[in-house]
Length: 237
Image 1 (cartoon, one colour):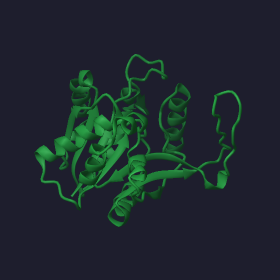
Image 2: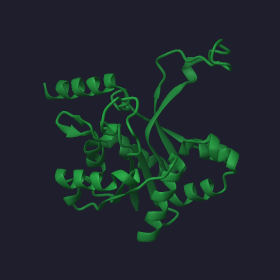
Image 3: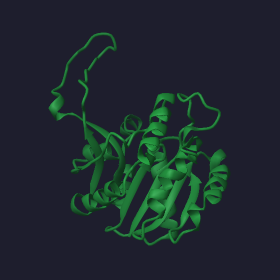
Image 4: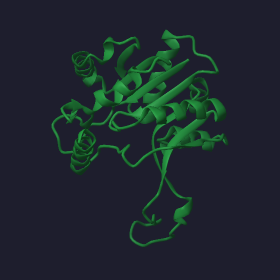
């Protein structure tokens, strides 16, 4: 079976808005709703979890109920996330274990709530990549030169851009395998890791790349919100 977890733990501090950024509207619809819709419409999804800070669980549920996204054939549930991304992933898998019979063959698709323009093709490709390789991340080639600085003042190195990619989401895994790897992390590893794909690499496991798109942006700053509005207006035109 295939499960999705939409991670909506942001507080929007860099956006400068009163509401967390996932609740802001783009094109007259909350960003979170746009992201959840992409999973809730799929016949192959057994369940869509939305994970948000405890104090926003009720608000999130009311928002999704008002949108009608939780009235379709795919169950949509809102639960609290954790202090870190890893904790949030653990909460999601634990909830699934309590309510479903997870198996080694299941697929667990995770996605940032503030990337509202993911496509059905990206989800399809994530699911297929997990079936073939066990884990995957959605990426795009880096178009900018990236520099490394050891002290934050001087440039230490400039890697070959042809080998660099930018990570997006979805990132997808076998849920039981991801839990196994997370439970085996040392405190030092836990503190340094904020990404499921990196956990796999640390454990020596392959992670496939799935093609993303520049339009699959993460809404972080006001300029991103303006771009998202422009993108939607362009689609409508």
